[in-house]
Length: 148
Image (cartoon, rainbow, N blue to C red; front, side):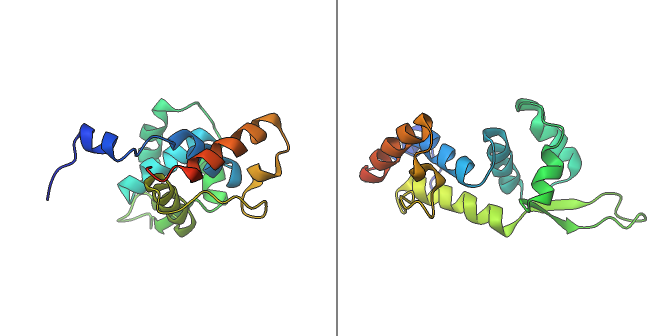
């Protein structure tokens, strides 16, 4: 198996439209940038503990409610509960909902799928704010670009 290098990733145009795709994912799923990046980090780990969460949040803005909110909204689920004797702490994983979102982000980045343009499937397309109107034209440009 060939190992990827920096040139391969550049040739794939993988990060070309990352910001627009990232904004779409955050806005439509009521997440902020740090939440989504943390969920991607956890998805790469497969299983993690609350201690791993503490380590993973060092590079993000502080949000004391982030862990509770991600757990309550179903982005993180308990994979194995502690039992007070042999397992001293819970082990978590990202939920099916989270895995679906992250896989969809990857498919959009690779050009296998377009960002939705209907108002039912994309809150940005309602154009309620100036930022949304700018993102609408950016989304149209991303969807037109078939070399991503």
